[in-house]
Length: 470
Image (tube, rainbow, N blue to C red; front, top):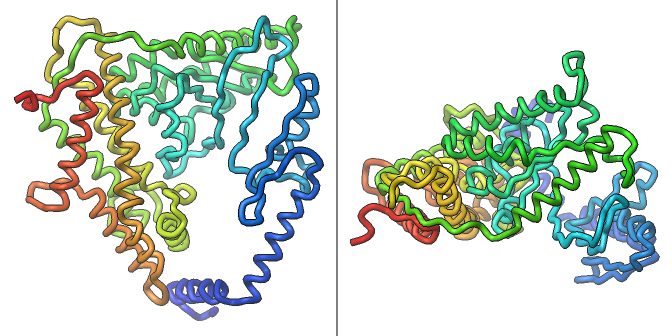
């Protein structure tokens, strides 16, 4: 093994994996680990466990409103990461938690606001090659009245929060946006003498991000964000402390004001949108160019990830990650593995190119409407487009070629990593071919599908495509 080439070692590891999967002793080891994990549920003394195929699937628990502390304490078994609870926590096994109130803070006034809060796994603050949000997140855009983007004020907006802001804007959802900066008490510096200076310091990073989005996605997005950001950007400090109705420090008073402003914004944004009465008219030829750019920006980075010739700046993925991806998509019915998200990538790249197309119609009917009215219509059309692309991307990338993904995973032995990469590239070539100048049945079918999809979305959102009236 020490003198083998890297390719030989890779082949050996694949063969060893297959051997272990078929080995009875190895399966006994897996079963013993699962049995040990299952014993963690024995420590539960409250609630009801429902099982599916002998494995715990759901746990339900209720407590009187007056017994809030014990309720939270029991929930912590499924959500906490405190070191003193290690060995007893079930957090790593949890896929989701639903908690029903009423929950009213000490500083609350009147009745508890009627809210449904959908929280998710953090997106991270590290800038990586993964620039697309998981489809688990983007599917929620359509059902939510308000999107609260939470980021730490202690470092510049980048990585996950930056990708989220880009995704929200390219999906036409920026009108629902509220930005909440936490850890505001941790913003320090010799050049930041007071609270206003610290706020401007944080907002400068956000302003840079908005400017970059304007260059990529269109100036109406930039202008729209610059209008809502001043009033819908909130700062929170000392959130680890319990807030009282009569805050003692200026920092606590500012945080209380921010919470009350957050509730006020949510109540306003949840109201039905104002109807619009202007119609944008688009040229289909410009749509073809937008689709072509979107597919190119999806395909080129993936060629680099697969170790194929590419000019993209992303990193090549290890063969083990590519193999795991083919298994997730082919055998487990998922649409991503870790940061490898082909369906989410196709969705994101298409919307990022289609949004500028929607921003520049041939004309408006009637002419002379206010720019604010134009933005409302474009956002409405973009939301319709995003909803349909949400279905198109996983259908073409995951569901239709499911057999091809299984075949790509099945390769074993010397040279299997290269063959698997070429198979994955072949899946993308058939699922999202780059439209070219020459006639190609696969490319023509793809272009027809996506153009008709966008035509429907444009018309449903209140626009028109030139030439489709006849």
